[in-house]
Amino acid sequence: MSGGVLMVCTANLCRSPVAQALLASRMPGVAVASAGVRAPAGRGADALAVQLMAKRGLDLSTHVTTPLAERHVRGAALILTMTHEQRDALLRKWPDAQPKVRRLGEAGGFDVVDPYRRNPFIFELAIAQIEQGLTDWRHAIGELRG
Image 1 (tube, one colour):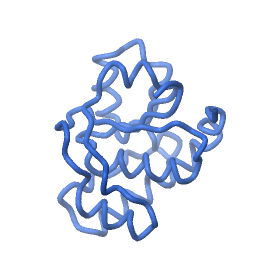
Image 2 (image 1 turned 60 degrees about the horizontal axis):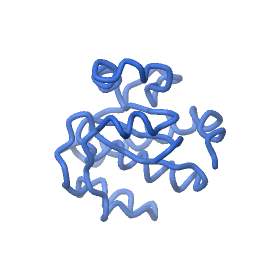
Image 3 (image 1 turned 90 degrees about the horizontal axis):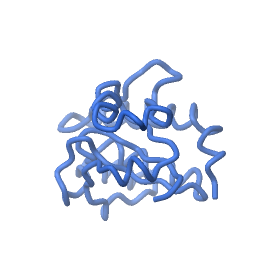
Image 4 (image 1 turned 135 degrees about the vertical axis):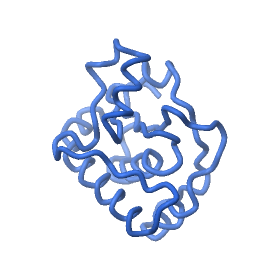
């Protein structure tokens, strides 16, 4: 990815793939990827995330978890993390990325709740928070269209 948006969460199983799919569906001209600060390599998305996104017409069934790497950080124009902790972990490793690293819920003053191994209500809450964050960032993201 060069010049697009990188969505970052912890394991790249739930939040960041959901954010990636939602953004890609809303703004097809924007390059978008996802990764996790502590992601296990090569796992599929969480089954409940796959199910809930399928109800929205979005397919996460082919998602493969990706550990965050320098190439992702350098290649992105904007990096949106789900939490303060993820932002801080990323910046500890790549401090030069600070100008382009933000929290998805920054404007709304929230961290996106972690739905991993939790009930559908918490997943729906996380999805709603992601949707709100994407709405808040729509103008900045729209400027990245290629």
